[in-house]
Length: 296
Figure 1 (cartoon, one colour):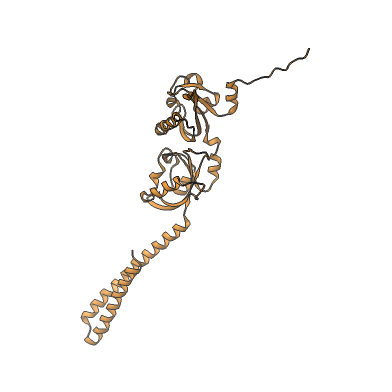
Figure 2 (cartoon, helix red, strand yellow):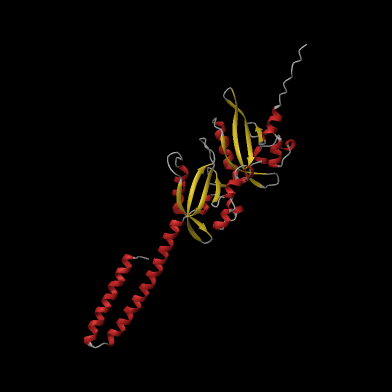
């Protein structure tokens, strides 16, 4: 009698556990239906306590509520969503995750949502932290979900103050449109690199910003911004500062000379007075030329 080999098929739970991602399923109202072991580790909630709660209670901090609502709208429209997302662990600790959410449909109707998430620190943080540039990950609202330590080293920005706030809070108001254009540019047609002013301590510094989509598929809402000081514009800025200083100093010297000539003119004999007056007029013309050619 021939012995038939039995095929061992892993259960759905075993497959999800092997995946290594936190996998969470909810109904369309956001009530948690399933919560695998990786989700327990990532978010700190045992499955027994997470199931039955609304997903916003156990994973979504206040700074991400609006983004979560927009993701839900995209899913209802039949679109999946992938990107960086600020989440929270039990107890309120904020962390940064790479998230993919997809809708589950039956007969064309959305009946549930499945999301897979992975700690950003286990995915791309090591790459971003090795860069000498300051690297920040922003969402569709330009809110920072991750900032590398270089933001503190290069610009004096405390990482915990940068995360959760719009990056535009630190960009000069006159450069907001330039930044928006960089984000909107088609990466297949144009290099997404620009020069902006950012706040460092109490001053503004010119930087070069390179923008890259975290995901290549359409609809990704996460963008990596690599920021470094713009040496070209820094040199121009320093040259202008020196010109301003020289301009101011030379004007002061010429003005002092003009006053001295005025005083000498009141005491000079007629033959010498004519020469002093001519010198005074020459100084006046030099001042006018300096003001015109090198404006402060």
